[in-house]
Image (spheres, rainbow, N blue to C red):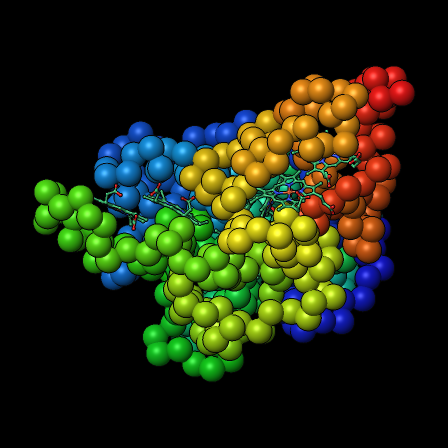
Length: 426
Ligand code: HEC
Ligand code: HEC
Ligand code: HEC
Ligand code: HEC
Ligand code: HEC
Ligand code: HEC
Ligand code: HEC
């Protein structure tokens, strides 16, 4: 079938919006450790040849082992991966049929890697186009999309998106978001901003040419690693290796000691929608004023619920919790060094830093029964109705938490009913 959707935003935004279409929530998967056994192996966060400043997360492991262990379970760490049997979630070999009887896709695995092939008939002749999966984007909470390298006539390396994606909830291969069913499109070019949000660092072609989205195939750091939030680690690591006696941290950014606005801007770099880049990708450093690097999307666009448009910043900042405290940030509730998805008791503990259970409207009737879940009554899940995703099984919508924390009587009633507690309030 077809996506009857008109994407009228900027070319870049269109790229992103595409993704919104197909994302569906997944039951919380178990955290997986994908680090290989070998000492030198840096697993999913590998850099083929580490660049000068950015070292990758394994460079932090020896001195911060607990932080490293927790972080390596997170979606941030796993959001960009090199293909391997461990990182590839979909099954090979497989065939994906389309509504077009003359076109199907084959997912193949050979000793040279994983491939997507479009097999069909064009102009009366059989036609086959095949590309290798060179890079995976997406931790697989919702799914994985795939990129491949192509060298242009100037010898520069460009990245393109592949037409088939893997969808976690259905455990199926599907048309990549925004791609028309029954067509084979291998020409969607990857913009730097896509990699800025899904990797730590990517080298560009040397010298960069304006308007050309060419990258360095050898020098990159995958995952949203420690250094994305703490700044490049070379000086810090070098210093502390040479001065093991010095326990005062040097040459590294601790976001927790930045002003709250600057802390939130670090998250806004990627959690406020694409916006318009004002400086080259990967030039922002934590602690800098984000407005010099990025023009954020208009408020109405930020205020929408969706994978690539959900602006936790815009919604949270309208909440009384945010407005009536000093210095609430994203890390008031989120620990970036742990996998906490779905652990509503842990999130509720964060609410109880400022609130007492007695404050909840339901407490009089229910007592501490609701202690472990403030979330389902006050931080609601909403579907993104504007972006339906059509599949043979029906229409699906993105479900995300609305960071506008508030009092929602209907949701509260539904929660009580679902848990057989309604009589307690009568
Ligand atoms: C050779 C040991 C060593 C390595 C490797 C190392 N650090 Fe550190 N780091 C330290 C020491 C020592 C401190 C200060 C004591 C502490 O906070 O644990 C520190 C503190 C920190 C702090 C807290 C800063 C503050 O102001 O409180 C951060 C953030 C940090 N390191 C990040 C990193 C990152 C990111 C990496 C990898 C790129 C890394 N470290 C690698 C030794 C190291
Ligand atoms: C402005 C930053 C930004 C840009 C640009 C961006 N993404 Fe994302 N992407 C995100 C964020 C943030 C999420 C996760 C939202 C969530 O989980 O709440 C996400 C989620 C995803 C996911 C789902 C991952 C999963 O399993 O949960 C995929 C796949 C993805 N993006 C692919 C892409 C591709 C391909 C591009 C470029 C063509 C792109 N994104 C551009 C920020 C961005
Ligand atoms: C997505 C952003 C992000 C990533 C990725 C990240 N951190 Fe942090 N880190 C923060 C923020 C924000 C703080 C301050 C608030 C807090 O303590 O949670 C922090 C605090 C720290 C501290 C100081 C903790 C303390 O109690 O003094 C250390 C050390 C640290 N991080 C190391 C690391 C290491 C090592 C990695 C990778 C293995 C890493 N971080 C990955 C954002 C991040
Ligand atoms: C470089 C871009 C980038 C930055 C900076 C960033 N994030 Fe993310 N974040 C992402 C992407 C991309 C995902 C989706 C990863 C996936 O599932 O593939 C994500 C996912 C998340 C999730 C969902 C995790 C889950 O398991 O469901 C949380 C929570 C989150 N980020 C919080 C933060 C906070 C808080 C900050 C600021 C300290 C921050 N992020 C900084 C890009 C970023
Ligand atoms: C940093 C402190 C802080 C944290 C953490 C916090 N809040 Fe609040 N919250 C406040 C303050 C201050 C107010 C406004 C005064 C009041 O009602 O107590 C408020 C108001 C509220 C309200 C009333 C909203 C309204 O529109 O009238 C609710 C409901 C609420 N919080 C729930 C939560 C939940 C649920 C969490 C955890 C997900 C949470 N809060 C986390 C400080 C906080
Ligand atoms: C008052 C607590 C609180 C604050 C502050 C907060 N969050 Fe959340 N956030 C939550 C809860 C609760 C969830 C749902 C967690 C779950 O279901 O696993 C969540 C989920 C998320 C997710 C996963 C996608 C989704 O919608 O389920 C992302 C991404 C995220 N938060 C980013 C942020 C960012 C960025 C900030 C700062 C602007 C922030 N959060 C501030 C409580 C908070
Ligand atoms: C079953 C749904 C439900 C759960 C669970 C729940 N609340 Fe509430 N809460 C409500 C409703 C409904 C109100 C408003 C009615 C009232 O105040 O009588 C409310 C009111 C509040 C207020 C505002 C009180 C005021 O006077 O403005 C706060 C703060 C609050 N809740 C915090 C929490 C915290 C913290 C938790 C978890 C420990 C929690 N709630 C769990 C339904 C719930």
